[in-house]
Length: 203
Length: 203
Image: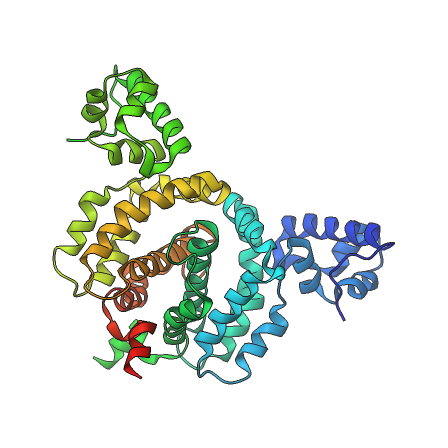
């Protein structure tokens, strides 16, 4: 089991690994980062990183305080099938923001907006681990574009609701927000008729 | 005619007015700000502010480098009627970002995300001058919620396309983006069936 929390007595080693991970990922990106290079930089055995964080993805998530595990939540959201996937995604996103686990998300958005390097790093991670997993499950043309449109729906909501705090969105109940955004995300992910390419080919 | 650019010889006065405007708006918000108070703070006659910037809205736009004039562009977008309004809004938004006028927008997003005060200030301005004007033209229930959902669609696109630069959205042609987002914004603004309240009342 990957463990991303600190324990008394292991904080020194974990902190050293996370500092090395941040430096390594910042230099070579998420895709270029390796457990081996992070271990060398931290002066520890690679197996120790796997013991603490489970995987490269796990050590990255801990290093940037990404609050949820795409290897778990994407398959969970996809498991019931594509019906109502849009609404499930929106509800999961809002539930995460509103939970204690969501607390680092505002800082994460701030760092991504403030720094091109942070944006590039998170972009690689999101593209591969979140949107790549989602796109693989879609059975239509342009799966990567569809997944990124779904992501734009969620990040736009987060910006107005949690960052800019624009009313009436900021105070709207999660079920009301999901009722509006769910069909949008569903359309991007599953409706063949909204694809401009499909529309053209039908003419 | 409001003039927001600098001219040789007037830079000192304009800069003094803008500094006073920033201080005044930061202290009392957009809604609470007045030409009179800004003039007093800058030590100039209120008529000079109107001469340079046309209105409170104009001096605010110049102070925060907001690149477009909602008093002009919202009526222009609404003029042809509500048909295809969603696509027109998306196209206008992308055209603005991609034009020289859009250059301050990234800095504006950065300041809003970095600072709660900047977020509060822009929130008041957007709510009153942009979304308020848009909501007034809608003929359905929950016009303010509908307008803010449209805004969330646009800001989400801007975040992924221009800030995080996520592919394939970052390189997608404006007409492709408008082809996907236009119907979403159109649905939020004009479709009575997407309102959760309407849906409930039909059951």
